[in-house]
Length: 92
Image (cartoon, one colour):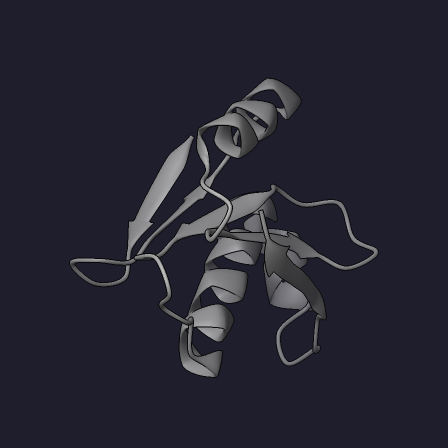
């Protein structure tokens, strides 16, 4: 998969395939967060957090934007500029 280091303790991962997505979930801990674009085909993401930590809205926004940037082609991404996309976020 791909990695996005947000801070020393917080790292996001996304898969490149369905197999990668399953592996991400298998390696995740219950307190990590699963992230996916709502009603839109995109990579699954996992945000690795320290136990009992919370992801701020800004971190969730950064990860959501990163997922779309990594998933969509440049053409589609430019067509979607300014469009809001909802994400599903829940503990693994």
